Length: 238
Image 1: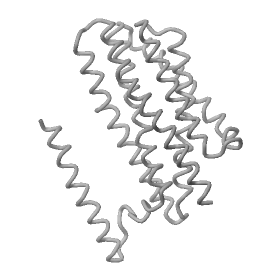
Image 2 (image 1 turned 120 degrees about the vertical axis):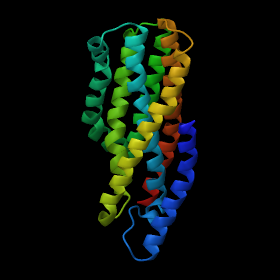
Image 3 (image 1 turned 180 degrees about the horizontal axis):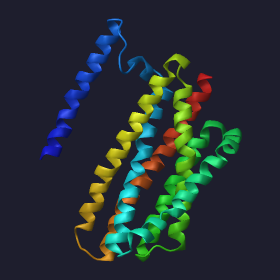
Image 4 (image 1 turned 120 degrees about the horizontal axis):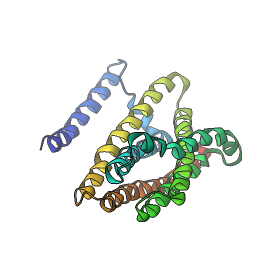
């Protein structure tokens, strides 16, 4: 009950915060958040992408529980099973500059496509209950997408802002990433726990993982379209 109460209270609290920032700006003071930044469509849409991007925190929560509670793996083995994603996350930034030179800001489109495809592959592979080659290949692809999106979404969003406001813009982007992370772990993670509560065997945990990660994959599929549109706006503004 308290969670729903806090969620309901967040709406008027947000409205009060926005009003206070607007009033501070009109009074010639230095607001915590410069609301004029949101008039830039690339900045605003980029924040939406940053929020959605870090919703993949649901993966880090659900994957470990699926392996340990569902399959009975030890913490060490379950941790090692994240390595393919980590390897992809290292490979992504290493390839980022070359990809940007070829397709520009559509690197975000490519990154979200890799995330959507990779996580969808792990969801499909979880039908076999125990992760196999397809599952881990999906993790590598998703990791590459993660490594492409993270540095570039920050670069593109901040690049739209005047240098004297770059620090403020960067803090807003960072805050949006953390809010997205919290939302992904709670909302999408809640879906996982609801599905897992139907039973305590491996099949139920695999189904719970599949349901939750499918939501993440669909979210990133939507982000592919948004990122493509944002990249077009960014080119026209230049």
